[in-house]
Length: 234
Image: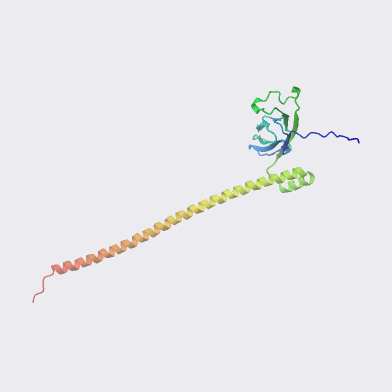
């Protein structure tokens, strides 16, 4: 019996999600995209992120060590730009390099040639393209893109959902402000009512007191008149 074998390619050291960097592009505003990287092995794996435009992006962390089956999130921030790129197309590229390191390795202890292919290490590379998305993208464009390019259609719908969330958040904040203002007006109205009742109570008391003083004065006048009048003669 003859058994044939096939060369099965080994799985990648690191799994990256998503497979492209997408930024909502707005003038003079930063935008960010998160990458989740996962170690697919039972060994420690070091990674490093490189880009063709290092002055345009801020990457943290740009280097790290993942323990077996561990994962982390890399945040890539697009710095505020002063002008739109032609046709909203971006030629920037990112490269994620990974290699196996010793079990006790720490990111601060990595040799300078860790990601140098000339060092004899096996370096895996994952290339990521950059996509700019306009915040004014319409649902119709998203449907057109989904018909021709399913991946990009889903991305446009995702951006639309982000805009919807931002709109709902703004509406919620305005509603909360209106509720607080209404509560404040109700409190002021209640204070005004209490003061009004107190004034009416004080006014009623003053009238009663004046009437009582008047009656006492009349009685004193009558008694004084009687006391000063001469006695009747027989």
